View (cartoon, rainbow, N blue to C red):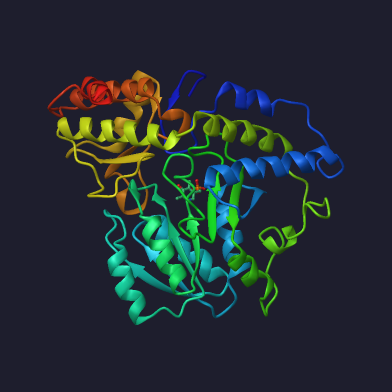
Length: 380
Ligand SMILES: *Cc1c(COP(=O)(O)O)cnc(C)c1O
């Protein structure tokens, strides 16, 4: 990889020059500098705007997984029944974090190549709704499926269940209304659609979630994952640990870029739609059957062609990095990330042009020039 490699993976994504410049600024002492507490708070306010929430927002120093684990550690008490909505690798894996903190995990399973059907969930909850917490994923990054939070989260709320949503690969690229959709804990991270380097996680926490955290009968196991230490950070001008100053400078600029754009979700929706239809016109098969993500697309590999071949040729001959997939989709799918700074017509155009050449060189017959078809779709 070099300075010019086009990074088209579903995170980390390209980081713009102004975000990198912000990270190069002189640092301060975040525990002593009064203006840093304000800066952190203003950055949280920018995130509130992006998430469309009045709930308290925190930024934690650690990659996205820290948010998932901190939510589980702080909300779940040993023996709590936790409903894990599972229609993909991250949804399934969320249960592992819940179990570490003593949850009795109960799965609501649905097809991995489709969005969760709220009607089926509604029926399920009629039979059993005795859950303290539910975990779910907004965008299943390995498969490119986006779940309808607008219908799922209010349903959970009706049953008094606290929703914990992993929206790491969706925030900034997918429609999201945290308060209107009654999402209790919304988790995001810096390196996907936000397009800052990996290293920060952020989360919004509703009053119901804080009440659960504050009324536990057992102490929270751990310190770094203990959200209750943050309860009065601003009032006390005290952080539980020294903040990652440079990362926060970068995050702030990245979030402001998205906010100043107005409606980045529409840009993502349009690019993703034009991309999918170009892929299908060429005769390629998308993995997802419905509920297609606006931030990542998983394409099934044509027969007799391995992921390594596509990956290596894309990188060596075209200087473009795309991704494979994980778990049961490993070696079966390739993924193009069209998140944040990667979600622009020129980048997707170049990626499709290169992908077309690589596939045809390997003997795959394509029904059209995908890049040309894509550009045509963008004009519609
Ligand atoms: C990227 C991502 C995370 C963070 O996990 P990593 O595997 O460490 O990058 C969490 N959840 C989802 C849905 C993600 O896409």
